[in-house]
Length: 200
Image (cartoon, rainbow, N blue to C red; front, side, top):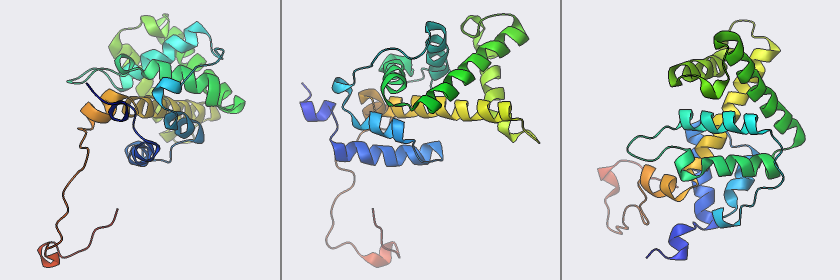
C-alpha cells in the first residue's frame, strides 16, 4: 500500500518536476500552470466552468492527441482533463482565458471550413492535421495575428497537457520512470574518471 508521501509528491519534488518540464516544453512554464501544479491533486477543486461544453471537449480531445496512449495511459486517462478544467476555471487570467477560447473556437471553425464537421467528430488523422497547422502557424512567412494566436494557443494546450500529465502519479512514476533516490553517494569517487565536477 503506497504511503501518502508516495502518492502526493512534496512541494520540493513538485518544483523539481516543473523545472524538468520547462526543458521538455522548451520554454518557462506559465505562472498559471506552475501554481496549479504546485497544488496537490487531492486539493484541486475546479471552480465555475469558464468555457462551453464544446470548447471543453475540443481541449480534452487535443490533450489526448498531444499525449496518446502508448505503453502508458493517454492524457485523459491520467486526469489531464480535470487538470485543464482546474487551471481554466481557477488560475488563468481573463486575458489568457479569452486567448485560449478564441483559439479553440478557431480550431472548430477550421474543422467546419475544411471538413464541414465539428472538430471532435473528425477522424484522428484530420484532427492531427489541424493541430499541426495550428502548431506551425507562426512559422509562416509574414504570419498574421490570427496565425500567431493559433500557435500561442497550441503552445498553451501543449503546456496544460504536459504539465497535467507529468504532475499525475502515472506521469511522474511510470512515464518518467520514478527513482526515489537516483544514483548513490561515493565519497571516494575519483574525479579523473570523469574529468569534471557536476552540480545540481
